Image (cartoon, rainbow, N blue to C red):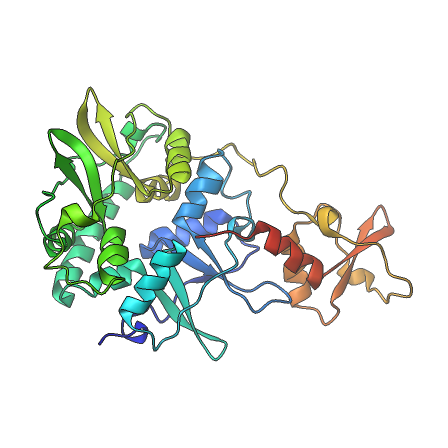
Length: 360
């Protein structure tokens, strides 16, 4: 029986919370991945994760500049972890129950790797078949990266044609078709409706593997997701991102004149960011992002403070975390116009992280 240790990624990409989101987008694009782990901030041993979904929902939807937002501000921190000895089905079950797509793998407090629903999905097919799928997907990514011109609407991003499968086909048939085509979903037409449902890689993981079922004996009709949310090709990238975030989906069939003309995914949007085909308003960030002024406390009586470690009120919480990580003093002064007006501690930072925390 396969275990988490057999299929996990042993060296997941790590990035600091104080780095710009744009750097994370670049790392994801270069490696063809959909998430990066975020190093624990000062005073914490907990890793965070920044996913493609976080970027779509928190950056693109609001037209923010990915270079003006810190990784830590968009990160999810309260993570469920896996053990290397878990079975693959056990990991899939935890993903299904928590509605997440990946689990950091931790043993004796040490990060050992990362397991994703893609790892679980690919365990269902021979390695050579998945290597073929990776080559197909890489070629598609390279063609996407070579595209030029601004991406402002869904029409600028969508892929076409869209592959389909019959509801009477088996889940194994769906896996084979997705792997051979290098895609992560198939539309399921029914009763003359071209987009009656959709079956995705995640459907296979959470509805077949997590339940210990045989994919040869489960039909697509038993695991299909429907009804399907669709979108117009002239919808803006921001509108598309908001729809994905609101519906909790990663891809939308594109309908024009009652006909399916394409499909757009979060991967398409991320590629547009990475290729600078889409950009938010330069310098625009959340107006309510945590800064030191939001979390600082009054100066304690008798506190020994080092002015060399001073922060200014508009410093981000991630700058404060980075400063604390390299100091033995766990209390930093906040100085404005030459006067100490408060202090910030690692406890203040951790409290701010909890407020920012969220699900994958």
